[in-house]
Image 1: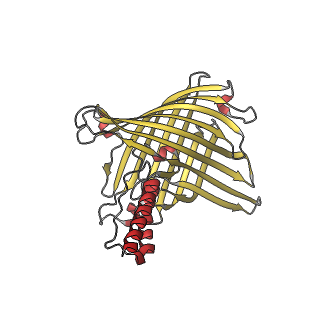
Image 2: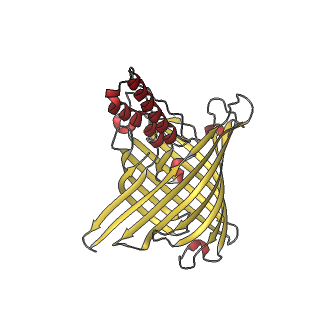
Image 3: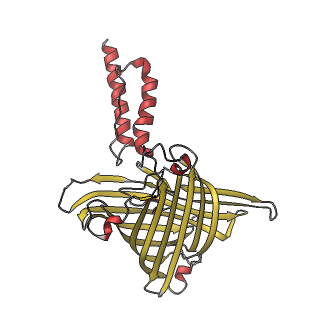
Length: 347
């Protein structure tokens, strides 16, 4: 009897420790233990803990967890309150075999981030610091033909972002980001480093009294869809790290100081009502347009980045995505005019 009690206690402690470690920095994980807990059911208990507890918290649960996998930072939105994976555009992977040129063309684009959060005390009427978050991330963007990226895209970015949200100001919550990153190629050649800052407001649709109330809030679009419009202002200082990496952003100078607005529009199906058609529930569209002005070289850069996804599973992790980008890439200023059709993965 004593041995059974001791074994039960050890099993509870080990499973509890796993929950604490895997759920660090994520939303609070809740695990329902089966009663009574039997040693003979240890395998079943462990499986339930991993699927319903720490892994759900780590990889997203019903919306977003500690680990985020998206197509871009714009697809994440706010680190503190990211777009749910079922409505966000996932990391995209595409491949084609060109029989005429005897080349294989493949591409991959996505961002992986790990977010760690601290929640503040809620105030009903007064402005207050709502949340703090920190997230290291890696962004990959590569288009290669026949193993060569001479005319393709070859950017591997490592960075980290610190985010602070301030609530109850002008009828909105304001998200302030400070980030730093290094852009390199996939073979490890450094291209540039940068530090930047961003402001993004999310309004209170029902209680807000300014135009900010509409920003980032779902609004009806017909019977089956919701849409959001989310603007932001971004500024960054960029410095060249290698002359070998030809980057249009450094055509006139070896540094750039850029600032400008961007806006993201999302359209996705309503999932809460059973009378919404299945195809609408699995549909999501994201369009981002950004414009930056370099105050040092007096050049401007713009990028239209759009993608539409049809989810292939009920939870929205796997999808078929058609994307199109036109303009200049934020990382290097390289011209891009690219359409892709491939699979996407979102967590």
